[in-house]
Image (cartoon, rainbow, N blue to C red; front, side, top):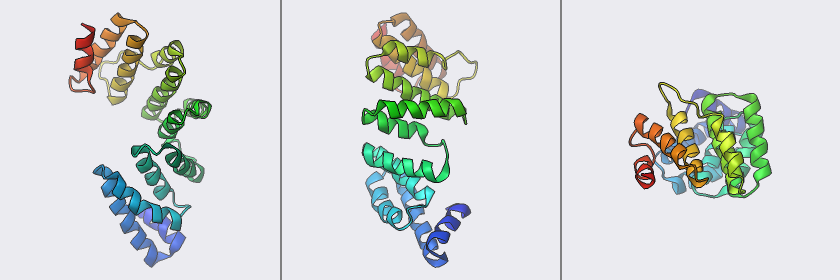
Length: 207
């Protein structure tokens, strides 16, 4: 565990106990990274009970619950993380929890905060994807398309965020019946990374 997190836990429960909790948090992080989410949850729940004001614990538990599709519980943990830190790091994940719960106004409010702050290009891209998904879920395909189109310009050396946004816009175009545009966007993704997502099969279905 990074030294600031060890110090955070030690401040909450004392040095000897803090070291043991840090070791348990490291074990939970290891399980999470290997997609053993049930194991991570079992390790993290007692930690969150004992150290409710430890941001690293609440964040990892929230992400673990998100991976387990436990949207309401995940949102509770990620809201605690947001309150404790003021960080935008998990805004897209929190917004996606609210989207899954059909709490669209709360998801949109998070997007507006994230868009206004623009703390990081990758975070803003993920937030835009979730916000567009909210609009599409509510039947506003045109609104979703307009939102995604703002962040999907061509770039010479695309990064992962560009591929993800192009793919989402392509999917929305296909759903809206704009098939030539969908082909062009899926083609962009395939040209940059033929193994990305299921882009090959999406292109085959359109040809």
